[in-house]
Image (cartoon, rainbow, N blue to C red):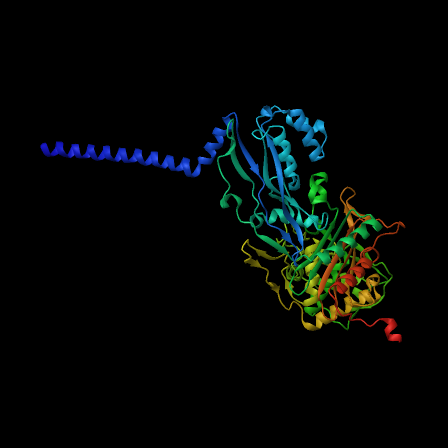
Length: 580
Protein backbone atom coordinates (compact mmCIF):
# COMPACT_ATOMS: atom_id res chain seq x y z
CA UNK A 1 0.00 0.00 0.00
CA UNK A 2 2.86 2.33 0.92
CA UNK A 3 4.51 1.56 -2.42
CA UNK A 4 1.33 2.49 -4.26
CA UNK A 5 1.09 5.86 -2.45
CA UNK A 6 4.76 6.54 -3.25
CA UNK A 7 4.21 5.76 -6.93
CA UNK A 8 1.25 8.13 -7.05
CA UNK A 9 3.28 10.90 -5.42
CA UNK A 10 6.09 10.45 -7.95
CA UNK A 11 3.64 10.63 -10.81
CA UNK A 12 2.15 13.85 -9.44
CA UNK A 13 5.60 15.31 -8.99
CA UNK A 14 6.61 14.39 -12.54
CA UNK A 15 3.38 15.86 -13.88
CA UNK A 16 3.95 19.08 -11.96
CA UNK A 17 7.52 19.36 -13.25
CA UNK A 18 6.29 18.71 -16.81
CA UNK A 19 3.62 21.42 -16.50
CA UNK A 20 6.18 23.92 -15.15
CA UNK A 21 8.59 23.20 -18.01
CA UNK A 22 5.74 23.37 -20.53
CA UNK A 23 4.64 26.77 -19.24
CA UNK A 24 8.24 27.97 -19.24
CA UNK A 25 8.69 26.75 -22.80
CA UNK A 26 5.48 28.52 -23.89
CA UNK A 27 6.60 31.78 -22.30
CA UNK A 28 10.07 31.43 -23.84
CA UNK A 29 8.64 30.66 -27.27
CA UNK A 30 6.27 33.61 -27.01
CA UNK A 31 9.11 35.93 -26.06
CA UNK A 32 11.24 34.61 -28.89
CA UNK A 33 8.39 35.13 -31.36
CA UNK A 34 7.77 38.70 -30.18
CA UNK A 35 11.44 39.67 -30.25
CA UNK A 36 12.56 37.88 -33.40
CA UNK A 37 9.56 37.55 -35.66
CA UNK A 38 6.88 39.96 -34.50
CA UNK A 39 8.92 42.56 -32.65
CA UNK A 40 8.90 45.03 -35.49
CA UNK A 41 5.16 44.65 -36.00
CA UNK A 42 4.55 45.24 -32.28
CA UNK A 43 6.65 48.39 -32.37
CA UNK A 44 4.77 49.55 -35.45
CA UNK A 45 1.46 48.94 -33.72
CA UNK A 46 2.55 50.93 -30.68
CA UNK A 47 3.89 53.74 -32.84
CA UNK A 48 0.67 53.89 -34.84
CA UNK A 49 -1.20 54.64 -31.60
CA UNK A 50 1.42 56.96 -30.18
CA UNK A 51 0.56 60.64 -30.86
CA UNK A 52 3.97 61.55 -32.21
CA UNK A 53 5.19 58.24 -33.64
CA UNK A 54 5.57 57.40 -37.30
CA UNK A 55 6.83 54.69 -39.65
CA UNK A 56 8.77 56.43 -42.43
CA UNK A 57 9.19 54.54 -45.71
CA UNK A 58 12.45 55.39 -47.47
CA UNK A 59 13.50 54.57 -51.02
CA UNK A 60 16.86 52.81 -50.88
CA UNK A 61 19.57 52.49 -53.51
CA UNK A 62 18.80 50.27 -56.52
CA UNK A 63 21.34 48.71 -58.86
CA UNK A 64 21.87 50.20 -62.30
CA UNK A 65 20.70 48.88 -65.66
CA UNK A 66 23.44 49.35 -68.26
CA UNK A 67 23.89 48.56 -71.92
CA UNK A 68 26.46 45.96 -73.05
CA UNK A 69 29.25 48.55 -72.94
CA UNK A 70 28.33 50.03 -69.58
CA UNK A 71 26.32 53.01 -70.81
CA UNK A 72 23.62 53.83 -68.21
CA UNK A 73 20.00 53.08 -69.07
CA UNK A 74 18.54 53.29 -65.55
CA UNK A 75 20.33 54.59 -62.46
CA UNK A 76 19.56 55.60 -58.87
CA UNK A 77 20.43 59.19 -58.04
CA UNK A 78 20.64 60.59 -54.48
CA UNK A 79 17.68 62.75 -53.51
CA UNK A 80 16.10 64.13 -50.37
CA UNK A 81 12.56 64.02 -49.06
CA UNK A 82 11.10 66.57 -46.63
CA UNK A 83 8.72 65.44 -43.86
CA UNK A 84 7.04 67.26 -40.97
CA UNK A 85 4.68 67.09 -38.00
CA UNK A 86 2.32 69.76 -39.44
CA UNK A 87 0.45 70.64 -36.23
CA UNK A 88 3.71 71.59 -34.52
CA UNK A 89 5.29 73.72 -37.27
CA UNK A 90 6.22 77.25 -36.19
CA UNK A 91 6.14 80.39 -38.33
CA UNK A 92 4.18 78.40 -40.91
CA UNK A 93 3.60 81.27 -43.37
CA UNK A 94 7.27 82.25 -43.46
CA UNK A 95 8.39 78.64 -43.76
CA UNK A 96 5.89 77.93 -46.56
CA UNK A 97 7.01 81.03 -48.48
CA UNK A 98 10.69 80.14 -48.29
CA UNK A 99 10.06 76.51 -49.19
CA UNK A 100 7.91 77.45 -52.19
CA UNK A 101 10.74 79.59 -53.61
CA UNK A 102 13.35 76.87 -53.08
CA UNK A 103 11.24 74.10 -54.62
CA UNK A 104 9.86 76.36 -57.38
CA UNK A 105 6.31 75.46 -56.31
CA UNK A 106 3.30 77.71 -55.83
CA UNK A 107 2.79 79.10 -52.33
CA UNK A 108 -0.85 77.91 -52.12
CA UNK A 109 0.25 74.37 -52.95
CA UNK A 110 2.88 74.31 -50.16
CA UNK A 111 0.44 75.89 -47.71
CA UNK A 112 -2.22 73.29 -48.50
CA UNK A 113 0.30 70.53 -47.74
CA UNK A 114 1.39 72.10 -44.44
CA UNK A 115 -2.20 72.69 -43.32
CA UNK A 116 -3.26 69.07 -43.60
CA UNK A 117 -4.95 67.68 -40.51
CA UNK A 118 -2.50 64.83 -40.07
CA UNK A 119 0.09 63.75 -37.51
CA UNK A 120 2.76 63.33 -40.14
CA UNK A 121 3.19 64.46 -43.76
CA UNK A 122 5.65 64.30 -46.61
CA UNK A 123 6.08 67.86 -47.84
CA UNK A 124 8.05 66.79 -50.93
CA UNK A 125 9.50 63.49 -52.17
CA UNK A 126 12.67 62.90 -54.18
CA UNK A 127 13.85 66.51 -54.33
CA UNK A 128 17.19 67.34 -55.98
CA UNK A 129 19.84 66.81 -53.28
CA UNK A 130 21.55 70.09 -54.22
CA UNK A 131 18.70 71.94 -52.47
CA UNK A 132 19.48 70.33 -49.11
CA UNK A 133 21.53 73.24 -47.73
CA UNK A 134 18.87 75.84 -48.62
CA UNK A 135 16.10 73.75 -47.10
CA UNK A 136 18.10 73.13 -43.90
CA UNK A 137 18.66 76.88 -43.57
CA UNK A 138 14.93 77.57 -44.02
CA UNK A 139 14.12 75.00 -41.33
CA UNK A 140 16.69 76.52 -38.98
CA UNK A 141 15.67 80.17 -39.59
CA UNK A 142 12.00 79.41 -38.89
CA UNK A 143 12.88 77.42 -35.75
CA UNK A 144 11.42 74.18 -37.04
CA UNK A 145 14.39 71.86 -36.49
CA UNK A 146 12.34 69.63 -34.17
CA UNK A 147 9.26 69.55 -36.38
CA UNK A 148 10.58 69.34 -39.95
CA UNK A 149 13.18 66.89 -41.15
CA UNK A 150 15.10 65.86 -44.24
CA UNK A 151 15.56 62.23 -45.21
CA UNK A 152 18.19 61.07 -47.69
CA UNK A 153 16.85 58.62 -50.28
CA UNK A 154 17.12 57.73 -53.95
CA UNK A 155 15.14 58.30 -57.13
CA UNK A 156 15.22 56.23 -60.32
CA UNK A 157 16.45 58.20 -63.29
CA UNK A 158 16.42 57.28 -66.97
CA UNK A 159 19.04 59.44 -68.73
CA UNK A 160 17.91 58.47 -72.24
CA UNK A 161 14.25 59.22 -71.54
CA UNK A 162 12.08 57.39 -74.12
CA UNK A 163 14.89 55.20 -75.48
CA UNK A 164 14.01 51.51 -75.00
CA UNK A 165 11.41 52.61 -72.46
CA UNK A 166 8.98 49.79 -73.24
CA UNK A 167 11.76 47.27 -72.70
CA UNK A 168 13.29 48.81 -69.56
CA UNK A 169 10.02 49.73 -67.82
CA UNK A 170 9.93 51.85 -64.66
CA UNK A 171 9.81 51.82 -60.86
CA UNK A 172 7.25 53.26 -58.46
CA UNK A 173 7.73 55.83 -55.71
CA UNK A 174 8.86 53.06 -53.35
CA UNK A 175 11.75 52.09 -55.66
CA UNK A 176 10.29 48.74 -56.71
CA UNK A 177 10.11 47.83 -60.40
CA UNK A 178 6.57 47.90 -61.74
CA UNK A 179 6.98 47.13 -65.44
CA UNK A 180 9.42 45.85 -68.04
CA UNK A 181 12.90 44.68 -67.06
CA UNK A 182 12.74 46.87 -63.95
CA UNK A 183 9.99 44.54 -62.76
CA UNK A 184 11.58 41.34 -64.03
CA UNK A 185 14.93 42.14 -62.41
CA UNK A 186 13.64 43.21 -58.98
CA UNK A 187 15.40 40.37 -57.16
CA UNK A 188 18.75 41.32 -58.72
CA UNK A 189 18.55 45.11 -58.65
CA UNK A 190 17.33 45.34 -55.06
CA UNK A 191 16.22 48.75 -53.88
CA UNK A 192 13.44 47.55 -51.62
CA UNK A 193 11.67 50.26 -49.59
CA UNK A 194 12.89 50.56 -46.00
CA UNK A 195 10.61 51.18 -43.02
CA UNK A 196 12.30 53.49 -40.50
CA UNK A 197 10.52 53.68 -37.14
CA UNK A 198 10.76 57.19 -35.71
CA UNK A 199 9.22 59.21 -32.89
CA UNK A 200 9.04 62.92 -32.02
CA UNK A 201 10.18 63.94 -28.52
CA UNK A 202 9.84 67.61 -27.45
CA UNK A 203 13.39 67.93 -26.10
CA UNK A 204 15.35 65.51 -28.23
CA UNK A 205 13.52 66.19 -31.49
CA UNK A 206 13.30 63.25 -33.90
CA UNK A 207 14.61 59.93 -32.63
CA UNK A 208 15.25 56.98 -34.91
CA UNK A 209 14.31 53.79 -33.08
CA UNK A 210 15.48 51.41 -35.80
CA UNK A 211 18.76 52.42 -37.45
CA UNK A 212 19.41 51.30 -41.02
CA UNK A 213 21.48 48.19 -41.52
CA UNK A 214 22.93 46.14 -44.35
CA UNK A 215 19.98 43.77 -44.02
CA UNK A 216 17.59 46.67 -44.55
CA UNK A 217 19.28 47.89 -47.69
CA UNK A 218 19.80 44.45 -49.23
CA UNK A 219 22.06 43.57 -52.13
CA UNK A 220 22.02 45.72 -55.25
CA UNK A 221 23.52 44.23 -58.38
CA UNK A 222 24.24 46.08 -61.60
CA UNK A 223 22.69 44.44 -64.65
CA UNK A 224 24.35 44.74 -68.06
CA UNK A 225 21.93 44.15 -70.92
CA UNK A 226 22.84 42.86 -74.37
CA UNK A 227 21.37 46.10 -75.75
CA UNK A 228 23.90 48.32 -77.53
CA UNK A 229 23.03 52.01 -77.15
CA UNK A 230 24.47 52.68 -80.60
CA UNK A 231 22.19 50.11 -82.26
CA UNK A 232 19.28 51.17 -80.06
CA UNK A 233 19.72 54.78 -81.21
CA UNK A 234 19.60 53.62 -84.84
CA UNK A 235 16.40 51.62 -84.43
CA UNK A 236 14.78 54.41 -82.40
CA UNK A 237 15.53 56.85 -85.22
CA UNK A 238 14.14 54.47 -87.85
CA UNK A 239 11.04 53.92 -85.73
CA UNK A 240 10.46 57.67 -85.57
CA UNK A 241 10.72 57.95 -89.37
CA UNK A 242 8.17 55.17 -89.88
CA UNK A 243 5.76 56.85 -87.47
CA UNK A 244 6.20 60.20 -89.20
CA UNK A 245 5.80 58.80 -92.72
CA UNK A 246 3.02 56.25 -92.20
CA UNK A 247 1.25 57.04 -88.92
CA UNK A 248 0.86 53.36 -87.95
CA UNK A 249 -0.98 52.17 -84.88
CA UNK A 250 2.10 50.32 -83.64
CA UNK A 251 5.72 49.74 -84.67
CA UNK A 252 8.17 47.12 -83.41
CA UNK A 253 11.81 46.62 -84.41
CA UNK A 254 14.18 43.94 -83.12
CA UNK A 255 17.88 43.51 -83.99
CA UNK A 256 19.76 40.37 -82.93
CA UNK A 257 23.33 39.10 -83.15
CA UNK A 258 22.88 35.75 -84.91
CA UNK A 259 26.11 34.33 -83.45
CA UNK A 260 25.03 34.34 -79.81
CA UNK A 261 21.36 35.36 -79.69
CA UNK A 262 22.08 38.73 -78.05
CA UNK A 263 19.31 41.28 -78.58
CA UNK A 264 21.15 44.47 -79.59
CA UNK A 265 18.15 46.71 -80.17
CA UNK A 266 14.43 46.62 -79.42
CA UNK A 267 12.23 49.63 -80.13
CA UNK A 268 8.45 49.95 -80.09
CA UNK A 269 5.85 52.59 -80.71
CA UNK A 270 3.97 54.00 -78.83
CA UNK A 271 6.62 54.66 -76.21
CA UNK A 272 6.85 56.84 -73.09
CA UNK A 273 9.26 58.63 -70.77
CA UNK A 274 9.78 56.42 -67.69
CA UNK A 275 10.87 59.46 -65.67
CA UNK A 276 7.19 60.48 -65.63
CA UNK A 277 5.43 57.30 -66.76
CA UNK A 278 2.28 58.25 -64.87
CA UNK A 279 1.58 60.95 -67.49
CA UNK A 280 1.09 58.31 -70.21
CA UNK A 281 -1.78 55.87 -70.79
CA UNK A 282 -1.02 52.29 -69.79
CA UNK A 283 -1.30 51.09 -73.39
CA UNK A 284 1.84 53.11 -74.18
CA UNK A 285 3.82 51.12 -71.61
CA UNK A 286 3.36 47.86 -73.52
CA UNK A 287 6.39 46.30 -75.20
CA UNK A 288 4.55 45.17 -78.33
CA UNK A 289 7.66 43.37 -79.65
CA UNK A 290 6.85 40.61 -77.15
CA UNK A 291 3.33 41.28 -75.86
CA UNK A 292 1.55 41.36 -79.22
CA UNK A 293 1.24 38.57 -81.78
CA UNK A 294 0.31 39.06 -85.42
CA UNK A 295 -0.27 37.01 -88.54
CA UNK A 296 3.00 36.98 -90.43
CA UNK A 297 2.06 36.98 -94.08
CA UNK A 298 4.73 35.85 -96.54
CA UNK A 299 7.66 36.08 -94.12
CA UNK A 300 6.53 32.59 -93.03
CA UNK A 301 7.17 31.02 -96.47
CA UNK A 302 10.92 30.30 -96.04
CA UNK A 303 10.32 28.17 -92.93
CA UNK A 304 7.75 25.86 -94.53
CA UNK A 305 9.30 25.69 -98.01
CA UNK A 306 12.75 25.07 -96.55
CA UNK A 307 11.36 22.22 -94.48
CA UNK A 308 9.56 20.75 -97.52
CA UNK A 309 12.85 20.78 -99.44
CA UNK A 310 14.75 19.28 -96.51
CA UNK A 311 12.22 16.42 -96.40
CA UNK A 312 12.59 15.84 -100.12
CA UNK A 313 9.01 16.80 -100.98
CA UNK A 314 10.25 19.49 -103.37
CA UNK A 315 13.54 19.97 -105.20
CA UNK A 316 15.48 23.03 -106.28
CA UNK A 317 15.23 22.25 -109.99
CA UNK A 318 11.45 21.84 -109.98
CA UNK A 319 8.89 24.35 -111.27
CA UNK A 320 5.37 25.27 -110.22
CA UNK A 321 2.53 26.67 -112.30
CA UNK A 322 0.90 29.58 -110.49
CA UNK A 323 -2.04 29.50 -112.95
CA UNK A 324 -1.89 33.21 -113.66
CA UNK A 325 -1.77 34.02 -109.93
CA UNK A 326 -5.11 32.50 -108.94
CA UNK A 327 -6.17 29.08 -107.63
CA UNK A 328 -8.81 27.38 -105.50
CA UNK A 329 -7.91 25.33 -102.42
CA UNK A 330 -10.69 23.44 -100.62
CA UNK A 331 -13.20 26.06 -101.65
CA UNK A 332 -10.93 29.03 -100.83
CA UNK A 333 -9.73 31.29 -103.64
CA UNK A 334 -6.09 32.35 -103.25
CA UNK A 335 -4.42 35.00 -105.41
CA UNK A 336 -0.98 36.43 -106.08
CA UNK A 337 -0.29 40.13 -106.44
CA UNK A 338 1.08 39.46 -109.93
CA UNK A 339 -0.30 37.19 -112.69
CA UNK A 340 2.43 34.64 -112.21
CA UNK A 341 2.93 31.67 -114.52
CA UNK A 342 5.50 28.90 -114.22
CA UNK A 343 7.96 29.58 -111.38
CA UNK A 344 11.09 27.93 -110.05
CA UNK A 345 11.33 27.11 -106.35
CA UNK A 346 13.47 30.22 -105.84
CA UNK A 347 11.01 32.40 -107.75
CA UNK A 348 8.21 31.33 -105.43
CA UNK A 349 10.02 33.28 -102.71
CA UNK A 350 11.37 36.02 -104.98
CA UNK A 351 7.95 37.08 -106.33
CA UNK A 352 6.16 35.80 -103.19
CA UNK A 353 3.63 33.56 -104.90
CA UNK A 354 0.87 32.50 -102.52
CA UNK A 355 -0.52 30.02 -105.04
CA UNK A 356 2.70 28.07 -105.51
CA UNK A 357 3.65 28.27 -101.84
CA UNK A 358 0.36 26.63 -100.93
CA UNK A 359 0.73 24.01 -103.69
CA UNK A 360 4.14 22.98 -102.38
CA UNK A 361 2.89 23.04 -98.79
CA UNK A 362 0.23 20.48 -99.69
CA UNK A 363 2.94 17.81 -99.29
CA UNK A 364 3.37 18.59 -95.60
CA UNK A 365 1.75 16.39 -92.97
CA UNK A 366 0.37 17.47 -89.61
CA UNK A 367 3.62 16.33 -87.96
CA UNK A 368 5.66 18.26 -90.54
CA UNK A 369 3.84 21.52 -89.80
CA UNK A 370 4.26 21.02 -86.08
CA UNK A 371 7.97 20.29 -86.57
CA UNK A 372 8.46 23.55 -88.50
CA UNK A 373 6.95 25.55 -85.65
CA UNK A 374 8.94 23.68 -82.99
CA UNK A 375 12.28 23.66 -84.81
CA UNK A 376 12.21 27.46 -85.07
CA UNK A 377 10.50 28.01 -81.69
CA UNK A 378 7.95 30.29 -83.32
CA UNK A 379 5.09 30.24 -80.82
CA UNK A 380 6.52 29.40 -77.40
CA UNK A 381 7.75 32.26 -75.20
CA UNK A 382 11.45 32.40 -74.39
CA UNK A 383 10.61 34.04 -71.04
CA UNK A 384 13.56 36.41 -71.13
CA UNK A 385 11.44 39.60 -71.15
CA UNK A 386 8.37 40.22 -68.96
CA UNK A 387 5.09 40.02 -70.84
CA UNK A 388 6.10 37.63 -73.63
CA UNK A 389 2.98 36.39 -75.39
CA UNK A 390 2.72 32.87 -76.78
CA UNK A 391 1.87 32.55 -80.45
CA UNK A 392 -1.34 31.18 -81.95
CA UNK A 393 -1.54 28.07 -84.10
CA UNK A 394 -4.34 26.67 -86.24
CA UNK A 395 -5.35 23.03 -86.07
CA UNK A 396 -2.78 21.38 -88.33
CA UNK A 397 -4.95 18.28 -88.63
CA UNK A 398 -6.66 20.01 -91.55
CA UNK A 399 -4.57 20.30 -94.75
CA UNK A 400 -6.02 23.72 -95.60
CA UNK A 401 -4.71 25.10 -92.29
CA UNK A 402 -1.21 23.82 -93.04
CA UNK A 403 -1.33 25.43 -96.46
CA UNK A 404 -2.58 28.79 -95.18
CA UNK A 405 0.02 28.75 -92.39
CA UNK A 406 2.70 28.58 -95.11
CA UNK A 407 1.63 32.01 -96.37
CA UNK A 408 1.29 33.32 -92.81
CA UNK A 409 -2.46 33.13 -92.29
CA UNK A 410 -3.98 31.49 -89.23
CA UNK A 411 -0.63 31.48 -87.44
CA UNK A 412 0.48 34.38 -85.25
CA UNK A 413 3.79 35.05 -83.46
CA UNK A 414 5.50 37.93 -81.69
CA UNK A 415 8.36 39.95 -83.20
CA UNK A 416 11.05 38.55 -80.89
CA UNK A 417 10.28 34.96 -81.91
CA UNK A 418 10.20 35.91 -85.59
CA UNK A 419 13.57 37.69 -85.37
CA UNK A 420 15.14 34.70 -83.67
CA UNK A 421 13.61 32.44 -86.33
CA UNK A 422 15.33 34.43 -89.07
CA UNK A 423 18.57 34.30 -87.09
CA UNK A 424 18.22 30.51 -87.27
CA UNK A 425 17.70 30.68 -91.04
CA UNK A 426 20.95 32.65 -91.21
CA UNK A 427 23.10 30.20 -89.21
CA UNK A 428 21.10 26.95 -89.43
CA UNK A 429 21.18 26.87 -85.62
CA UNK A 430 18.42 28.00 -83.29
CA UNK A 431 20.15 29.90 -80.47
CA UNK A 432 18.22 31.01 -77.41
CA UNK A 433 17.97 34.82 -77.40
CA UNK A 434 19.43 36.80 -74.51
CA UNK A 435 18.62 40.23 -73.10
CA UNK A 436 20.94 40.05 -70.04
CA UNK A 437 24.68 40.00 -70.74
CA UNK A 438 25.94 39.84 -67.17
CA UNK A 439 25.07 40.68 -63.56
CA UNK A 440 27.72 42.19 -61.30
CA UNK A 441 27.45 42.34 -57.49
CA UNK A 442 28.61 45.28 -55.31
CA UNK A 443 32.06 43.68 -54.95
CA UNK A 444 32.54 43.70 -58.72
CA UNK A 445 32.09 39.94 -58.99
CA UNK A 446 30.18 38.55 -61.97
CA UNK A 447 27.32 36.45 -60.58
CA UNK A 448 25.79 35.70 -63.98
CA UNK A 449 27.06 35.76 -67.55
CA UNK A 450 25.15 34.80 -70.68
CA UNK A 451 26.28 31.76 -72.60
CA UNK A 452 25.51 30.67 -76.14
CA UNK A 453 22.67 28.19 -75.77
CA UNK A 454 21.96 26.27 -78.97
CA UNK A 455 18.44 24.82 -78.89
CA UNK A 456 18.47 23.15 -82.32
CA UNK A 457 21.60 22.56 -84.40
CA UNK A 458 21.91 21.90 -88.15
CA UNK A 459 18.19 22.37 -88.75
CA UNK A 460 18.40 21.99 -92.54
CA UNK A 461 20.93 20.20 -94.76
CA UNK A 462 23.64 22.50 -96.22
CA UNK A 463 22.14 22.41 -99.73
CA UNK A 464 18.80 23.69 -98.38
CA UNK A 465 20.54 26.43 -96.39
CA UNK A 466 22.42 27.53 -99.51
CA UNK A 467 19.17 27.58 -101.50
CA UNK A 468 17.34 29.64 -98.88
CA UNK A 469 20.21 32.15 -98.63
CA UNK A 470 20.30 32.52 -102.40
CA UNK A 471 16.51 32.86 -102.80
CA UNK A 472 16.17 35.33 -99.92
CA UNK A 473 19.04 37.41 -101.26
CA UNK A 474 17.32 37.54 -104.65
CA UNK A 475 14.11 38.69 -102.94
CA UNK A 476 16.05 41.85 -102.11
CA UNK A 477 18.06 42.08 -105.32
CA UNK A 478 15.18 41.69 -107.77
CA UNK A 479 12.00 40.66 -106.00
CA UNK A 480 9.35 42.06 -103.66
CA UNK A 481 12.02 43.35 -101.27
CA UNK A 482 14.02 45.38 -103.79
CA UNK A 483 13.39 48.53 -101.73
CA UNK A 484 15.67 47.01 -99.08
CA UNK A 485 18.57 46.67 -101.52
CA UNK A 486 21.86 48.11 -100.25
CA UNK A 487 24.75 49.33 -102.39
CA UNK A 488 27.25 48.09 -99.85
CA UNK A 489 26.01 44.94 -98.11
CA UNK A 490 24.25 41.76 -99.20
CA UNK A 491 20.88 41.26 -97.54
CA UNK A 492 18.68 38.18 -97.36
CA UNK A 493 15.09 38.89 -96.43
CA UNK A 494 11.41 38.46 -97.03
CA UNK A 495 8.53 40.88 -97.27
CA UNK A 496 5.23 40.15 -95.61
CA UNK A 497 1.83 41.82 -95.76
CA UNK A 498 -0.91 40.28 -93.67
CA UNK A 499 -4.47 41.50 -93.58
CA UNK A 500 -5.84 42.32 -90.15
CA UNK A 501 -8.85 40.20 -89.26
CA UNK A 502 -12.03 42.18 -88.70
CA UNK A 503 -13.88 40.28 -85.98
CA UNK A 504 -17.03 42.38 -86.34
CA UNK A 505 -17.31 41.68 -90.05
CA UNK A 506 -16.04 38.11 -89.66
CA UNK A 507 -13.45 38.50 -92.43
CA UNK A 508 -10.04 39.97 -93.19
CA UNK A 509 -9.89 43.72 -93.75
CA UNK A 510 -9.30 44.96 -97.30
CA UNK A 511 -7.48 48.09 -96.14
CA UNK A 512 -5.84 47.42 -92.77
CA UNK A 513 -2.65 45.38 -92.88
CA UNK A 514 0.52 44.54 -90.99
CA UNK A 515 3.60 45.43 -93.09
CA UNK A 516 6.65 43.29 -92.27
CA UNK A 517 10.22 42.85 -93.41
CA UNK A 518 12.41 40.17 -91.84
CA UNK A 519 15.94 39.27 -92.82
CA UNK A 520 19.63 38.86 -92.01
CA UNK A 521 22.92 40.37 -93.20
CA UNK A 522 25.54 40.25 -94.61
CA UNK A 523 24.65 37.10 -96.55
CA UNK A 524 28.32 36.21 -97.14
CA UNK A 525 28.89 35.91 -93.38
CA UNK A 526 25.65 36.44 -91.43
CA UNK A 527 26.11 38.65 -88.39
CA UNK A 528 22.74 40.22 -87.68
CA UNK A 529 19.04 39.41 -88.03
CA UNK A 530 16.31 42.03 -87.82
CA UNK A 531 12.55 42.46 -88.13
CA UNK A 532 10.57 45.63 -88.79
CA UNK A 533 6.80 45.53 -88.24
CA UNK A 534 4.37 48.39 -88.87
CA UNK A 535 0.84 47.67 -87.70
CA UNK A 536 -1.90 49.39 -89.71
CA UNK A 537 0.28 51.96 -91.55
CA UNK A 538 -1.32 54.75 -93.60
CA UNK A 539 0.63 55.81 -96.69
CA UNK A 540 0.15 59.50 -97.47
CA UNK A 541 -0.77 58.78 -101.10
CA UNK A 542 -3.64 56.54 -100.02
CA UNK A 543 -2.09 53.40 -101.55
CA UNK A 544 -2.27 50.03 -99.85
CA UNK A 545 0.66 49.53 -97.52
CA UNK A 546 2.88 46.56 -98.31
CA UNK A 547 5.81 45.07 -96.46
CA UNK A 548 7.91 45.87 -99.53
CA UNK A 549 6.90 49.54 -99.59
CA UNK A 550 6.61 50.36 -95.87
CA UNK A 551 9.15 48.23 -93.97
CA UNK A 552 11.69 47.24 -96.67
CA UNK A 553 13.15 50.75 -97.30
CA UNK A 554 13.83 51.17 -93.60
CA UNK A 555 15.46 47.76 -93.44
CA UNK A 556 18.04 49.01 -95.95
CA UNK A 557 18.68 52.03 -93.74
CA UNK A 558 18.99 49.78 -90.71
CA UNK A 559 21.49 47.48 -92.47
CA UNK A 560 23.74 50.27 -93.71
CA UNK A 561 23.81 52.15 -90.41
CA UNK A 562 24.39 49.13 -88.19
CA UNK A 563 27.03 47.69 -90.52
CA UNK A 564 28.95 50.95 -90.62
CA UNK A 565 28.51 51.37 -86.84
CA UNK A 566 30.28 48.04 -86.33
CA UNK A 567 32.80 48.88 -89.08
CA UNK A 568 31.89 45.84 -91.18
CA UNK A 569 33.66 45.60 -94.49
CA UNK A 570 31.17 45.98 -97.39
CA UNK A 571 30.72 42.59 -99.05
CA UNK A 572 29.01 43.89 -102.17
CA UNK A 573 30.63 45.38 -105.26
CA UNK A 574 28.54 48.34 -106.33
CA UNK A 575 27.49 48.90 -109.90
CA UNK A 576 29.63 52.03 -110.05
CA UNK A 577 32.75 50.12 -109.03
CA UNK A 578 32.04 47.41 -111.59
CA UNK A 579 31.75 49.98 -114.38
CA UNK A 580 35.10 51.49 -113.43
